[in-house]
Length: 127
Figure 1 (cartoon, helix red, strand yellow):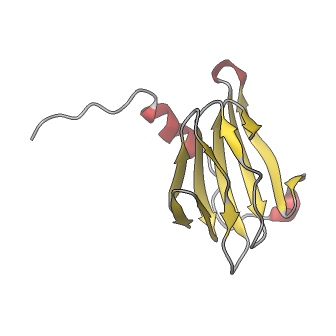
Figure 2 (cartoon, rainbow, N blue to C red; figure 1 turned 180 degrees about the vertical axis):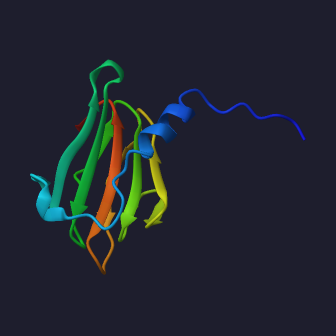
């Protein structure tokens, strides 16, 4: 079997995801900011040298993010609940990855609230 070289940045991306909080999470212990109807965010980590932010996102079923384009990569680790975007559906334990330059919108699926740990490598802009 041939050796496979991981893509650049994969090791650091995995290390960033390891920082996700473990369940159960006391949601009342955070100072949430509502970023869209039914979607709250709190920044847990930041590394300005790498233009990286690690955020906890808490969203209600049916909540949608506005359509946006990523100026850097985004990695979403679903901790509870489920969401979908134009590329598929993601449940607890799954990862939704968006590359720089891509555009999408996320929607929380019916059922329970969705809780995600999101690592942003750069900003995004509305489209």
